[in-house]
Length: 389
Image 1 (spheres, rainbow, N blue to C red):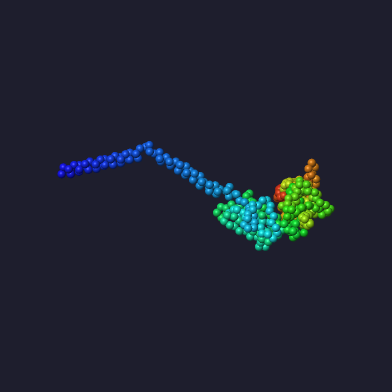
Image 2 (cartoon, one colour):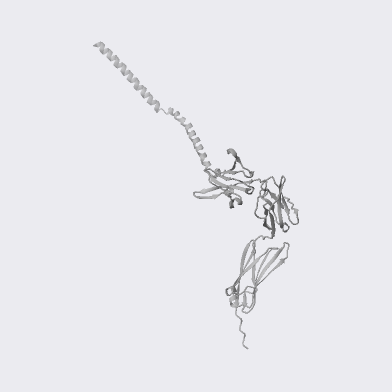
């Protein structure tokens, strides 16, 4: 028994020792977790914070793509055979009979084509809007299709869309025709007005940029000098007379040559019009603001302006109400001074004034730039009764 008790007491001592050690280790572990100096490990989260900042910067890029400036980066390409694409410049050439296919990036876009195609494309023109771009396709092309093709990006708010003209992309397309050097026209001649203060274009439009073009006068039959200043040539527009003068008037036409082919254009009948710089500024004046019954009345309306500028006058007067006929005298006379100017005048005559002639007289002067009206009021008084002797 004593031996058993001895061994039992030893085992109890060992178990107590192990239990005490376990408690000590547990307390030490809890102490380490509660120590402030151990917070250095969570500081490793800082790289994670910088990573988050990097991801926020990356997510900002799609926002930039949604701005109008990014949308404005539209461009125009020509679709070639076998799915090849070519970014177009100011001009391109497509052989007649081939297909013209243009692709313009935008959602959505609208297209502008030469007037000839707007009026009647004969089913050859097809325009399709895809999700991110629009496509213009023209088949069975001819020299008459030569002209400017334009892609207009659209700015839309809900269902309301409008063209962004300042962001339009244009390309001039030539369709060289071995039989037609000029774009065909159904008119034998075309009347063009030469305005004093406005450039005038003679649209000698060729189908090939390689054609050599010259300007000619019909009577007398001479070639017109083109100096690039007074008259200039642009292969996409034709000839421009920058400051028309009376000697530019007459019958003119263009001649194009390419290889062994030489052709003449439509004839242009140039009519010179001395175009005014501004609408007229009339001045009205009555012979008297108070007229006695039975006397005569004169109301004048005059305009001073550029020489050879036609001014038309119209009148409104009280006598119209009873059908009194209109009597006027019109004249033109030069005005002294350095510049060539003239006075145009219209005088309304009213003989033997009656009570119905009292009221407002209005003169309207009109020229090619516009019209302006001025008025004057006339009072009619009865005759004075003769004094008895």
